[in-house]
Image (cartoon, rainbow, N blue to C red; front, side, top):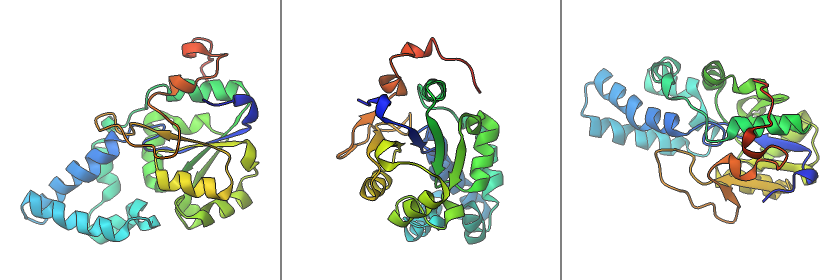
Length: 229
């Protein structure tokens, strides 16, 4: 699926790509609504409807991903509530083997995420994910989400990379389309970002369920991969 000899830089999304989206979906769809209903003494169904309305209003913006925004908007400590269910943070199948193999092959690895810094800190503490990367780039530092083509122009001023020799792996079709429009040559979607959810339509992009499917042949099954984490 991927000619690794033509790839110099690998850009990886975090949530739903390297890490299981089950944690995030559980938090926003289950844990937060229950807490919100309890705090504001309302039926759970009403809490879900109220939160869904607020979420829709922020969709496609950095506020959608911002822990501090939702803490102010909802009057709750979102970072603390996320920590309550941090035991659910987990890697997706084959992600660690792939990152280790690509490091061994000398590829430049950059984590590129819309996640808020407080969410990143929690997930790094649980997984040590950041140790695999040469650089970590957060959309909040650049002032626009990855779905916005301007993100990639700003990213290019921060991180030196060659678009025609770069692979982006992401679970978001709008992000993949934005990157493709900017000129990133290689793109790969994730078929099942949430291990407890449905298989997603990858649209016009090639997709994988497990990173074992694209592990370089030099590292079959991860058996020859050194431990770098």
